[in-house]
Every structure is written in structure tokens, then in C-alpha cells.
Image 1 (cartoon, rainbow, N blue to C red):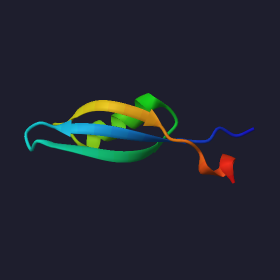
Image 2: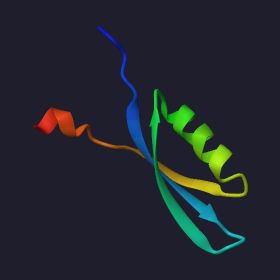
Image 3: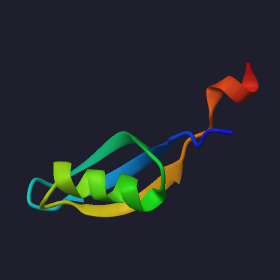
Length: 59
């Protein structure tokens, strides 16, 4: 049985630009998704992280 990555939706607030970004990351854990967001948005603040539902399960 193989371990598969999951998709996480991360909301990042950039208070300097007064903008909220939403990104999806392919990661093994929620912490890995947060780390990927921090690399992309160094000055941003992560405000929420959600695990996205796997569409393959519904087909």
C-alpha cells in the first residue's frame, strides 16, 4: 500500500499589499503544505489550511 500526497488549500494574508491569496499545495502533511506556502509568501501570514476532498473517490 503506497502513501499518497494530499491536496491542501492554504489561505495567506499579505498585510503589506492588503491582499489574500489562495493556493493549493500537493503535500504529505498539513505542516508540509504550510512550509510550501511560507516559501512562496515570505511576508504572508497563513490564516487557514483545508484538506481538499479527493475527486477520484467520488467518481
